[in-house]
Image (cartoon, rainbow, N blue to C red; front, side, top):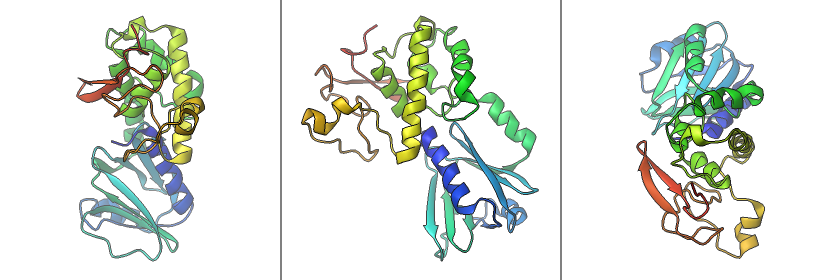
Length: 272
């Protein structure tokens, strides 16, 4: 499932290619056909992201709410657009560009109150401008009172929106925190450090459209090691490196199932 930086990048890409202009809207698959007919020819006024949720505002008609889930894909291209396949749930097009949405968990036309209800159930997002100031406080209120592991709390979208398996594993490693520590055992200084780190790391993810979490002194060229080869891209410390040697202590990276997702950590660097 895409992490929050990807959704913020998609919001920016939609805004750049289609914002402020009327858009052709179709649903070749047919599942969004009625709503597409209402939107066709209207202006894309703005775009937003909150966690893993993307919102597209069309003049006078409401918001298209998109959640990619595990299988959703978004593909941009330059005009002329090729004939769409019957797997395309939603296509936006103008004389210069097109974008196809396939396989999302959610693609629905919603009202402003319905959109607000989605925001209300989500935690603060490190990438949302309004959450930069008080987002750490809001999340800390829940983290500091919980007996749940910090690893599970970071993946709970009601606590922090947008953090997925990669950022979860990497930020815990970068701050030397055992993933099985309870939220209530995390200090405020540790939490503030992780929150600030998430803002910086996820901003870089938006900028480069990939996740890099390794500090300069631990990059392949600095350490004389081969670069990571993985379809997720980017240099990481522990994510999907089970049984490999830690870049810092040389110990073996471990993996385990936690909250139905694979957890990765280094016992040597992340001690309780």
